Length: 103
Image 1 (cartoon, rainbow, N blue to C red):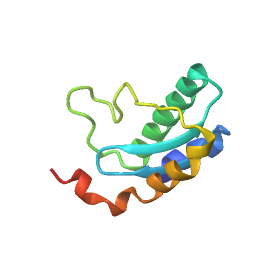
Image 2 (image 1 turned 180 degrees about the vertical axis):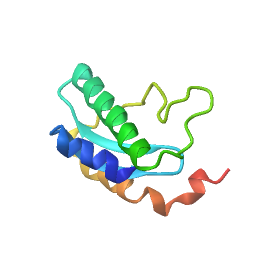
Image 3 (image 1 turned 60 degrees about the vertical axis):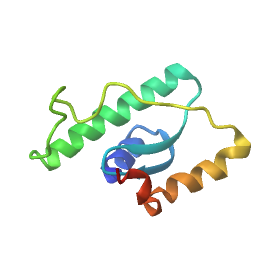
C-alpha cells in the first residue's frame, strides 16, 4: 500500500512529505494549499491507490460494510512549520510503537 500511495503521489505530482502504513490505517503528511486542495489530494491518493492495489492483488478483502478499500472520510490536522520535523519523525517511527495498536 505504501508503494501504491507513493506511486500515485509521483504520478499526480502531489506533495507527499511522509507516508507510513499500519495494519488498519495510514499516516500521511501532505502539502496542500487549502481544504479544497487537501480534499482533491486525498481523493486522488485513496482512489488511485485502491485501484492500483486491487489490480495487483484482487484477493485483498474490502471493508465488509462498504465494499471499499478505504473509508469515505479521513482525519486531517494542520501542521505549523515549527512542528514539521516533529510530525515527520512521529510518522517515520510509528511502527516502533506497536503497543499503541495492540488492544
